[in-house]
Image (cartoon, rainbow, N blue to C red; front, side, top):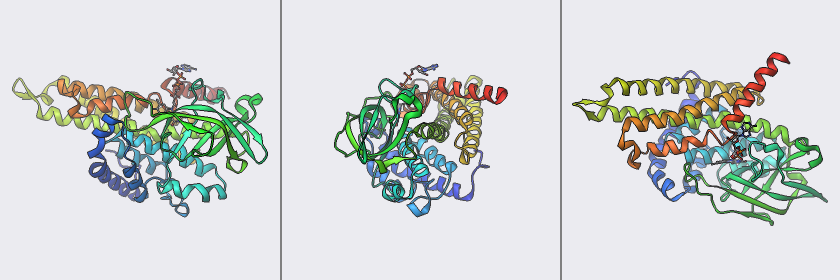
Length: 384
Ligand SMILES: Cc1cc2nc3c(=O)[nH]c(=O)nc-3n(C[C@H](O)[C@H](O)[C@H](O)COP(=O)(O)OP(=O)(O)OC[C@H]3O[C@@H](n4cnc5c(N)ncnc54)[C@H](O)[C@@H]3O)c2cc1C
């Protein structure tokens, strides 16, 4: 695979995570899928390896690396378990990278080290029952009360919601200002007034726990405002773009695993006295998966480099995950076809990757919303 984006440090991280994924994660993937089981012990082991906070500086228990490193970690985990990669991504990127970038020194000292080591799990709470794609139309409100805000409302489809200690919660502090009246809060989910729904049952990404959060006048000190009052919109938007660029690596991982499973099987399985890899219609699938996977790889790591120093590279991030996610669903389906009946059975695991792949066309903003972002920016660049 293409290596030109990777430094020596990146390659070391890649080897460490690959070993962890093969030795520690692979034995539990079936249990995760069957029982919707999240291996918290492995999450914490990843913290001990220093891999939960790649973009946080070493002063705060991070690795002091970059988004390429973050995505290498998700890609290597995702090659074995996209679900585990998703939960790690929600913690490390949606919550921790976002919190680290936007927090003041006091907040960093209080929250970042425990999240970086995995002692605390984190979540990001943006989506609500009535506002998904229209995320800025959120209904959750925060009302000033002395030195605090009282937050009321609910969030849904939140990754890690049942196990997280800390969440970034977006709420309207000035509803009359619409999207310009949003504020980001750091919330301790063990606070009075917070309740959590049961994990929701999903078609894929099983083992990554997804659920609802309900807030009934939850008291959050003013000191827990992330960034500035009524400046949450900018945090939402830049956070979403970084999230798209980083999570695209999970789709890339699914494409790579699909190719590996299809190629291995096609060399072993014989029909009409020959390995099926010798049939040109099978070769067509292998060639297509390989070529599009290479294209995904280039696009994903290019977008990560683009977004590293400019979190407003919305078009690049949207293009990367749009392509990688759509292709990965198709690659997993093609790989199932290469395996025939065996592909439909759980034994070869490719059906799990197909179920997992679909999520990346929906979470972090849907394919349709990504297309709107790309087209809108293209038009703006041309017309000013
Ligand atoms: C497993 C999982 C994990 C998730 N994790 C998190 C998390 O950790 N934190 C969080 O905040 N959220 C999370 N989400 C929520 C996710 O970001 C939303 O599901 C997503 O943004 C889509 O919102 P929706 O589901 O309400 O769909 P809707 O917005 O209701 O969209 C329904 C359909 O309408 C289309 N559509 C909507 N608006 C337009 C438009 N203007 N033009 C064209 N088509 C349009 C959509 O593309 C889609 O096809 C998660 C979701 C899932 C499934």
